[in-house]
Length: 143
Ligand SMILES: Cc1cc2nc3c(=O)[nH]c(=O)nc-3n(C[C@H](O)[C@H](O)[C@H](O)COP(=O)(O)O)c2cc1C
Image 1 (cartoon, protein in one colour):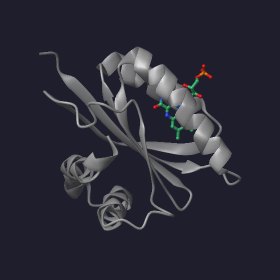
Image 2: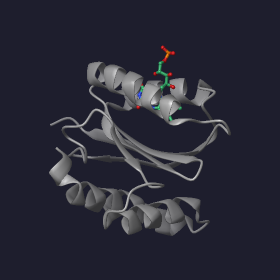
Image 3: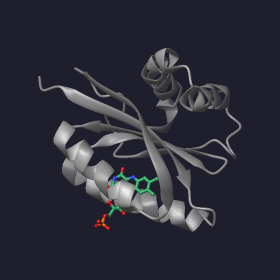
Image 4: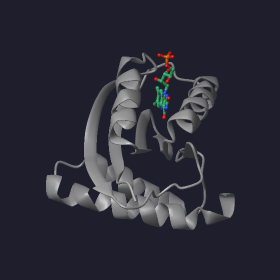
């Protein structure tokens, strides 16, 4: 089985970001990611994006370089790079979670993930991937 590369980054959404912008981002993400066999999740909270990209390392990094150049976000900061034997988001080319409007019980978990991403405690950031795995389990009903 080939290894799966996981990359998590945090970035600032542009000031004037709208839900139409986010919908456009998701549409092109899903189109490109399907072709590149990239899966993951995009979380939006209060002007920030946290995204997990997973798949072939070269293709994930190529996708990241397109996102870095994208003016709908800025100050992108990679938080986690790791390899494993299994994807977290098998079936989704890019799942979306809006932490600003969600009311589900997973909201607290998502907030914890983002708080950790912002934290300066580098060692604790390793918990982000297991927490995203847990988030995915709670989201099963959406598949
Ligand atoms: C927050 C954010 C997340 C994005 N996620 C992806 C993604 O997962 N996959 C992808 O192909 N493009 C993603 N994009 C869009 C790319 O930046 C880019 O617009 C798109 O891939 C088309 O690239 P091109 O204009 O060079 O053809 C994202 C953009 C933003 C702002």
